Image 1 (cartoon, each protein chain N blue to C red):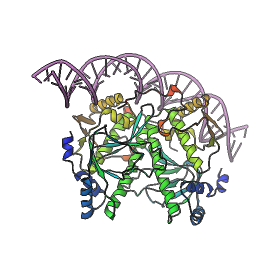
Image 2: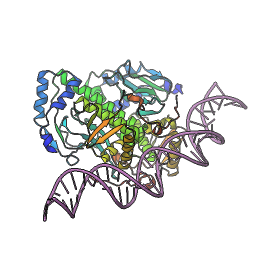
Image 3: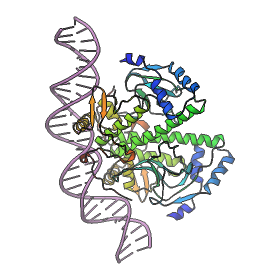
Image 4: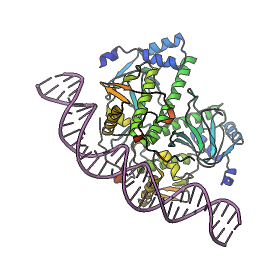
Length: 244
Length: 244
DNA sequence: CGGGGAATTGAGGCTTCTCAAGCTTAGTGG
DNA sequence: CCACTAAGCTTGAGAAGCCTCAATTCCCCG
């Protein structure tokens, strides 16, 4: 498993950053140099405890990480995901009770994010931060108002889009390294229900998930804030549309 | 109702900003001057459509606003709240499909946020932005892993803390201008269930809510990321603590 | 005093959870 | 080469939380 990671380069991260802003040759070199200080993380084992020593902004080269909040009774919620090309900066913590941790959800590679001394990287980081916020808002809408079926569909769509930016996705498929239980912790469900819902999606022909590869069918248009679309009526209770 | 707002000043906003960073006298004056360009918004009527012309960062002087996402089928999710002293800046939208709106949830007063030309306001805005992100993360954990009872309790605690910063809260109470239905849209519930849960909280002596004023009992210590605390066991299903 | 939005209440149903077992797959060591 | 293990995936049955659909009551306001 780690063997494949050993061949990990800055390719995916660089691809995403360049998709966000035009980088000068100097900046591209800065990214490559930063990538040489890469750090490998074992999946769900090693975790960067956020909330203490901030090592400065990080750049994800490979793998999937997650910002996680743990409850005292064992419940856990994955707040957001970090995939190749994503930049993570611990917010200048006011209260020492930062309370969220960054953990590697599978074997991953990270490196310090090169300093944005020029316009290109600065723009890329700004764009990345803006997208991060958009993902948080989307996660809120997902958890607050979508059914299990919709949540999974919406989340898979999001991850597909994000991985595509870094060139980590195929035509309509991508590699899914997470367990159903991890997915459950992200979507506010139990692993049992995630499992059953996935089966329903397979039956509906919306999804294929064989051997760590997810293939999303008929992703025709992404209504973004509208949800629905390719979702069977059965799971879309017609909430009384309170048009106020 | 609007009468009280007419007497609204910059007092609350100024108080919050000064709690976040030390402001020079010049900066305090800048805030007061900005407050003179205030704009009154009718509750749940007028709404600033975000996603088109961004009028620059805004400062809330009075009232409660919300960032809202609407689904095509009528469902709606309140993503975050803005209370006096909060600063809102539309993220430099990459995709024109911004998809979230800012709505006045009750009669409110806003003004353009004064430019941060000096360190004080700059720090205050930075601190405010950091808190905003923390609130988003908290909202995600709330929606993903808390019961209705816990969600309401946690949300009320958060709003109490936030209002306190601006001096808008009393000893252990504050004015709640929202309807139960609005609350439901924020917490991913229905108004009926919010109502029943509130009754349970009143029965448990955790809460008083008479005539638009909420009083939270025994807020002894706020475990922040731990949840629980003053929550009856009945609503705290002992999830199998998967200590991984 | 009438009107209307908000808060309550009741009954029934469906999504999702809990608890437990089996099953599959991949990795390990004899 | 094959038990043996551990982790993840499936499945079943029953319970619970939350939702839907109406009514009905309450309360503020003109």
